[in-house]
Length: 455
Image (cartoon, rainbow, N blue to C red; front, side, top):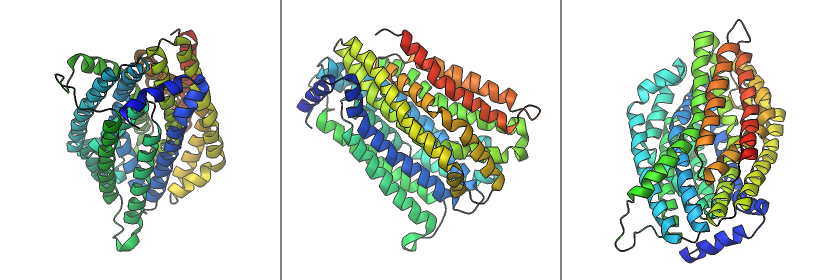
């Protein structure tokens, strides 16, 4: 697809009904989420076979939560670029779309430098968030992943720019290739295929950062073919006004994207505070296993949200407010319906999945299964709310989703876990109840805001 083809692609999307437009753009992203989800679940299973009682698995899971903050920051800041680029595309302003894409790349460079700082301080972070058994492999994994985080950041930025232009097939190709290649090589190092030494999770970190760096560069090359990034004569790569606008909007969306991980890390910290190091060990494993099994639903909701937000932005850019509103509702309904399949799969296969991941710890298995049985029924609510948040982001409104996520995921979820998780109340079950109530509110509150919103 050439640069000249981008505007017709956007016009073709806008000529469809809101539901069909969302499905056309979101379906390839949803398919891509299956590659990512399959990669994550299989990686968890492989790390659980290391034979150290789930230490490598838990250490890598916490490392992923910490480094995911940068991926989520990139995604959130990218949402501001998506709003700018999709609105410019809808309005037919190709030059503004190119300027916004360049600023997104600059923001990605800054985030990459921040990830390096996390790598430098991997040891104290491991001591703060990892159980004693998980610290050695987890800290080594975290250090490599954070120091090489630029690949993840630019992969996320590239995908955001492509979907803002109505292109979701190239992101599917990018994600499919990197997921398959990374998984095959990780399995080779974990199980000693092809004569390799089965040396645990540290080589897997090296495989991941190298392949993601290649994928990020590949994504930027794809963008340059469809939306030339070189400034016109007399222009600079850096545009202060647009960069300031993008960062101002993007920080709100980035914080919104990060609140979910911060809420999860808060629960892990609370589990040790409320239950003590010994009693919280199985809950720690359960929370980290759940964080991985939860990923398919989260990624699928993000995929449908990623297909919804550019449609909303393009519609508003072309002054079609009713189309934007209908697209937001359509995307949320599709996301909720898709999440029903995650609910059914987790409820039917919870024990099988957990036992496959952590075969050698009966108490951790029991806690993990109980947690999944509490949270899986509210997946449709969570997906519904996530997609509405993306729709608001596509409209350039990053504030409301941030505030409702803070209220639900930090204040309500954390507060309930603090009180109900007390051993004199419900103990471990109190944490499960907190997650269930939080999941319900994640759908009901955004739905209420969208019902009141008039674009």
